Length: 111
Image (cartoon, rainbow, N blue to C red; front, top):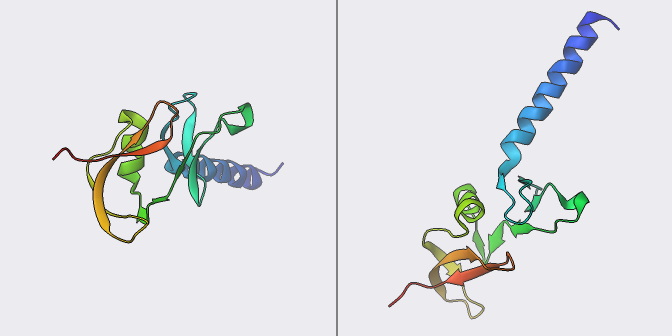
Protein backbone atom coordinates (compact mmCIF):
# COMPACT_ATOMS: atom_id res chain seq x y z
CA UNK A 1 0.00 0.00 0.00
CA UNK A 2 1.48 3.38 -0.94
CA UNK A 3 2.50 5.52 2.04
CA UNK A 4 0.37 8.46 0.84
CA UNK A 5 -2.75 6.28 0.85
CA UNK A 6 -1.92 4.96 4.34
CA UNK A 7 -1.50 8.53 5.63
CA UNK A 8 -4.91 9.51 4.22
CA UNK A 9 -6.52 6.42 5.74
CA UNK A 10 -5.09 7.26 9.18
CA UNK A 11 -6.21 10.89 8.79
CA UNK A 12 -9.78 9.78 8.01
CA UNK A 13 -9.75 7.54 11.10
CA UNK A 14 -8.53 10.48 13.24
CA UNK A 15 -11.29 12.75 11.88
CA UNK A 16 -13.96 10.08 12.47
CA UNK A 17 -12.75 9.56 16.04
CA UNK A 18 -12.76 13.31 16.70
CA UNK A 19 -16.29 13.67 15.30
CA UNK A 20 -17.53 10.85 17.52
CA UNK A 21 -15.96 12.52 20.59
CA UNK A 22 -17.75 15.78 19.72
CA UNK A 23 -21.04 13.87 19.54
CA UNK A 24 -20.62 12.32 23.01
CA UNK A 25 -22.85 14.15 25.48
CA UNK A 26 -22.07 12.14 28.60
CA UNK A 27 -22.52 8.78 30.28
CA UNK A 28 -25.73 6.76 30.07
CA UNK A 29 -27.35 6.61 33.53
CA UNK A 30 -28.70 3.11 32.77
CA UNK A 31 -25.68 1.21 31.43
CA UNK A 32 -22.66 3.58 31.66
CA UNK A 33 -22.01 3.61 27.89
CA UNK A 34 -21.77 6.94 26.04
CA UNK A 35 -24.84 9.00 25.14
CA UNK A 36 -24.34 10.43 21.67
CA UNK A 37 -26.05 12.89 19.35
CA UNK A 38 -28.13 10.80 16.93
CA UNK A 39 -29.41 13.74 14.87
CA UNK A 40 -33.03 14.10 16.00
CA UNK A 41 -32.43 12.80 19.54
CA UNK A 42 -29.69 11.73 21.96
CA UNK A 43 -29.27 7.99 22.45
CA UNK A 44 -27.16 5.45 24.27
CA UNK A 45 -24.33 3.92 22.27
CA UNK A 46 -25.19 0.62 24.00
CA UNK A 47 -28.46 0.24 22.06
CA UNK A 48 -27.08 -2.83 20.25
CA UNK A 49 -26.64 -4.44 23.68
CA UNK A 50 -30.25 -3.66 24.62
CA UNK A 51 -30.08 -0.23 26.30
CA UNK A 52 -33.03 1.89 25.15
CA UNK A 53 -32.09 5.16 26.91
CA UNK A 54 -32.85 8.26 24.81
CA UNK A 55 -33.42 11.97 25.36
CA UNK A 56 -35.33 14.24 22.99
CA UNK A 57 -33.82 17.40 21.57
CA UNK A 58 -37.10 19.26 22.22
CA UNK A 59 -39.42 18.93 25.21
CA UNK A 60 -42.70 20.83 25.52
CA UNK A 61 -41.77 22.96 22.51
CA UNK A 62 -38.44 23.98 24.08
CA UNK A 63 -35.06 23.03 22.58
CA UNK A 64 -32.75 21.44 25.13
CA UNK A 65 -29.24 22.87 25.19
CA UNK A 66 -26.07 20.81 25.29
CA UNK A 67 -25.65 21.90 28.94
CA UNK A 68 -29.22 20.77 29.76
CA UNK A 69 -28.47 17.31 28.36
CA UNK A 70 -25.09 17.09 30.10
CA UNK A 71 -26.67 18.12 33.43
CA UNK A 72 -29.40 15.49 33.04
CA UNK A 73 -26.79 12.81 32.38
CA UNK A 74 -24.43 13.81 35.20
CA UNK A 75 -26.79 15.14 37.90
CA UNK A 76 -30.17 13.76 36.74
CA UNK A 77 -31.58 17.32 36.78
CA UNK A 78 -31.20 20.68 35.08
CA UNK A 79 -31.28 24.16 36.49
CA UNK A 80 -34.54 26.08 36.05
CA UNK A 81 -35.44 26.35 32.35
CA UNK A 82 -37.76 29.09 31.11
CA UNK A 83 -39.94 28.92 28.02
CA UNK A 84 -41.71 25.56 28.12
CA UNK A 85 -45.20 25.60 26.59
CA UNK A 86 -48.16 23.75 28.06
CA UNK A 87 -50.70 21.90 25.92
CA UNK A 88 -52.97 24.93 26.32
CA UNK A 89 -50.22 27.21 24.99
CA UNK A 90 -49.16 29.02 28.16
CA UNK A 91 -45.48 29.44 29.01
CA UNK A 92 -43.98 28.01 32.19
CA UNK A 93 -40.63 27.39 33.85
CA UNK A 94 -39.43 24.16 35.45
CA UNK A 95 -36.43 21.97 36.03
CA UNK A 96 -36.14 18.75 34.05
CA UNK A 97 -35.27 15.62 35.99
CA UNK A 98 -34.71 11.95 35.21
CA UNK A 99 -37.05 9.84 37.34
CA UNK A 100 -36.31 6.32 38.64
CA UNK A 101 -37.36 4.85 35.26
CA UNK A 102 -34.89 7.26 33.56
CA UNK A 103 -37.73 9.18 31.90
CA UNK A 104 -37.93 12.99 31.71
CA UNK A 105 -40.15 14.71 34.25
CA UNK A 106 -40.82 18.30 35.28
CA UNK A 107 -39.91 19.63 38.71
CA UNK A 108 -41.75 22.86 39.37
CA UNK A 109 -40.36 25.62 41.62
CA UNK A 110 -41.75 25.68 45.13
CA UNK A 111 -44.01 28.65 45.75
